[in-house]
Length: 308
Image (tube, rainbow, N blue to C red; front, side):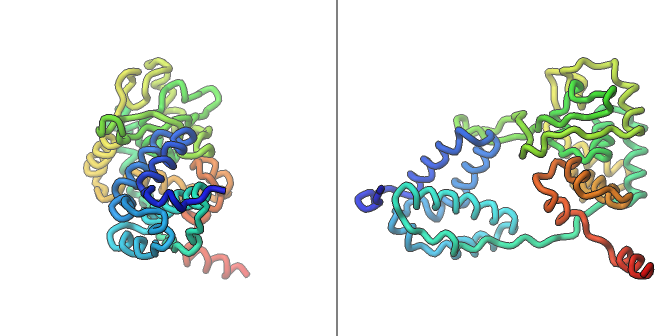
């Protein structure tokens, strides 16, 4: 049995660094960068120098309370999840008994998800179709498939099968911090979960738009640029989306993710079942779809009760 006694000069930083090195073998590049950022920004400032005996006695809920003052519940929940994983590693490696179950993780509130009105959606679609550039048509694709911004930025023509009328989501694009150079870089990787790798049906409306473009591009070209060597990264595409909102006379406070929310909301309105919607969105569980989108309005409830 391993024993931490005699190893009490080992610091939280030393142990967390070993934990991260082990994780690196099994996690995505982007996840590794996120873990590293969480350690440097949120955990090391408070815990870095603590020895194993310090860690056994420390009240971690004090740290959680401090984090909650400046960060969202979702962010703190993610930090606590990483912290618990490291503490569990310490318990296993050094035969410790840190009371991990006592650490409180903030509860996430089911907030109302913002969606575009039918008028706003119509104005946005009309502007994008009139503009008729690949960048504007990328917005149309997201509005009709629920694809995430990283997924549309990495989409290539080879992933669009017009014969089968399917878009295959196999990759995502994001900017991460490179731990070697301390600079950021753009990477194209697998999506966030296995369920995110999916095939989304192409509607007739979307099919007619894409069919006109089909023979103009090579299969390795990025959809948004029509070029295999040039891409548009998410932060640039977000800026473009803001400009399109302004030109479409839609409030510019909307984030790109509203396209996904709007698709989900519209699918529920027309009676799509939750399992199908969950598969289209690439959610890891049906519960995620239920919790996020399936909130019947007061009017709908009233309408059903009137039928009794």
